[in-house]
Image (cartoon, rainbow, N blue to C red; front, side, top):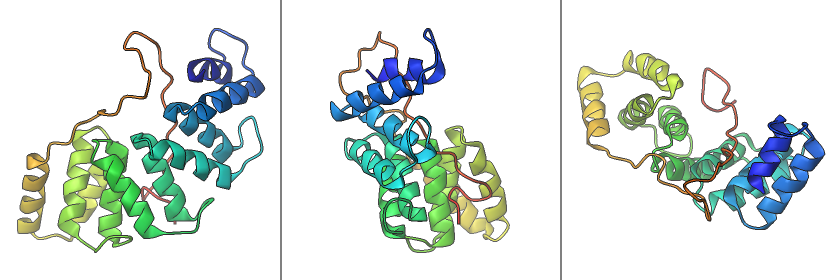
Length: 204
């Protein structure tokens, strides 16, 4: 259902039809598929194919996040951080970002680093921030390298060394989450990730 929805959304193999995409994403979401839930939430967030609704976006992101989907967890953190569809809550943003980051999701690792750098939802901690940026950079998030460079300018050499050592000793399991009922041979639409405005991972 989720794959068919993605085909209709992007016009792959079928004529693009957002109404059909919404219908199939909704079926997937209602059947408990976390990837379908995340993608339906993204449509509510962007207003693509149906009226924009932050509350519905947050509801479906949370449904997917509670099943362990790291992209949804990071998206839900974004909603809490910005008060989109849920009350603004930096602590909840940190909780969900951490859950995604611990699964090796690089975008969430950058976001968590930013929370530590700003002291929002967590205690201000430059060493922890640099450690998570280091992990995110190794995981391929290009935002992280810029944040590391900026943060290192206000850190001591000892702090940078400690943070780097901490990152080297941390062994998260990237892409450890496998959606339910996913066949290794079957094509699978990727869950939608929300775009993070720069300079910070979250908007202000």
